[in-house]
Image (cartoon, rainbow, N blue to C red; front, side):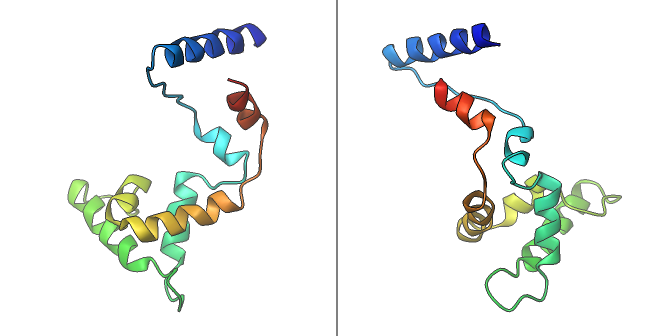
Length: 116
């Protein structure tokens, strides 16, 4: 494992010297272990926001996302995370995600990424 991390770190440093950008692809496990909900969990939160009196009632967007999903596949009973994010304007989208990120906890994946 340490050898793999060192190889990745060397590749990132090498790209940095050449002024190239790098992208690190990680799975949902990094977020989930940090306390951030999975995509289906976020969709459920959007659905369950119906009736809240403050700006966190996102049910209008959930309904729009469900309509969009049903256009793609009439048998769907729930929109995907992508459907929901595609209809949420940037402001509400940022506020929604900020709520998860602000309560996230540092985990070993973050430490490993930071070591790169």
